[in-house]
Amino acid sequence: MNVVIFGPPGAGKGTQASNIAKKFELYQISTGDLLRNEVENQTDIGKVIENIISKGDFATDEIVNDLIEKVIFDPQKKNKLIFDGYPRSVNQAENLDLLLSKSSQKIDFIFFLNVKKETIIKRIEKRKILENRADDNISTLLKRYDTYMKTTKPVLDFYSQKHNFHEIDGDKKIVEISSKIEQILSV
Ligand code: AMP
Image 1 (cartoon, rainbow, N blue to C red):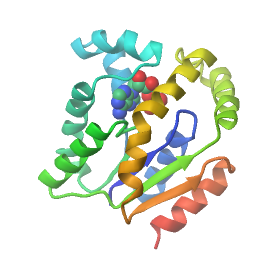
Image 2: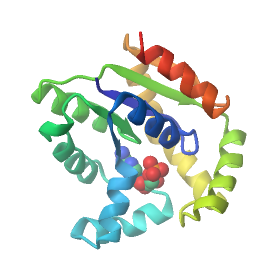
Image 3: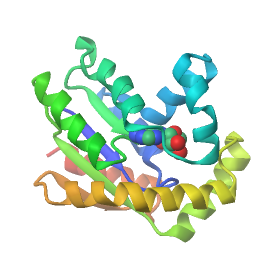
Image 4: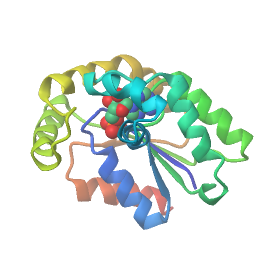
């Protein structure tokens, strides 16, 4: 099965995606991680996106779509994918559908982690202390939130029409969210 999990920054996508990946033996595909890898390895893409990511802006659809294409056509990962942080725009969502259908796959479950802005701010503050991610200061967070609202909101409109779309209350405790998601996936 293939799963998409999305929601604003700090909604807990990464944590939930990692739990689901372990439990259901899926590959967690985080475009944030893929992009940070490129930056770390100072590849051509990495050099271009370093500034973009640190400012809280989005990488271009072209760059992200290229990275994701390799993953989707990897036979080992076929029908074992959980996308975390992708798609973030309607263009990316359409591209995902196209690549999946070209490789005889589809999205089986879509989860939207809906979370209040105050909850996100509290969580990012904690993550800043724990992980010390350079992009996790409050002003970057607010920028990321605004970028999210502007760019990713249409993705919500795109997916919320679908029969396999599930909205999850992301203000709940991590374990409660996990069990809700697992319950849906186990049906
Ligand atoms: P994340 O780890 O998912 O919070 O992503 C960190 C940063 O990577 C984001 O703020 C964006 O700058 C960039 N990024 C991650 N995924 C995408 C995507 N699907 N499209 C564009 N930019 C992305």
